[in-house]
Image 1 (tube, one colour):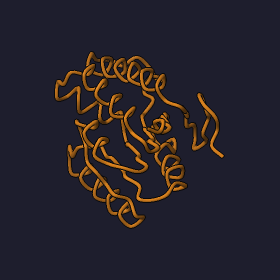
Image 2: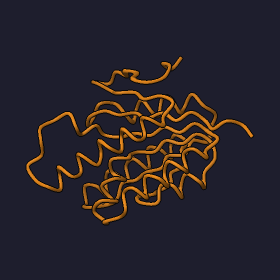
Image 3: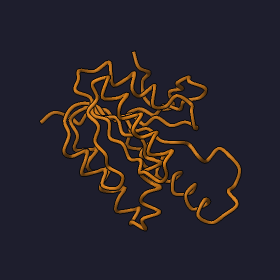
Image 4: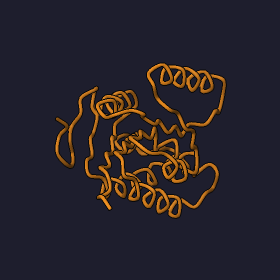
Length: 175
């Protein structure tokens, strides 16, 4: 049995270039590429955004799988390189649905460790700003910080995106 494939965690702020960078990395690998989207439709603007992203990806040869909660199941069902976008929305869905965060994280880590193809996880770094003014926002910030630490510990490579520039925090830089 061959060793599990590399896991890359790509963190950064909003519009920092995380997804674009992950797409560049995955497109250097043989297709098919799978894009696992975790977003849910909350309003008309989000519905339009999701539709636009799906159309853009399908034109580029991506296979899109939607997994707003059971991300571990989606990962277990696909082969080849995968880009998960994003852990932050996944965490939002879990928290708003009052799911067990610890169990969900364990299931996701188990699914990732079983994968035999490269996996790229995109997540928003939300802990660099001010202390949120309400309990839900503080709970979310804290949960995201714990989640990032947990996944960064397991990742082969961690990249922080700043203004479109990748800063390798852990592991070897891409060639």
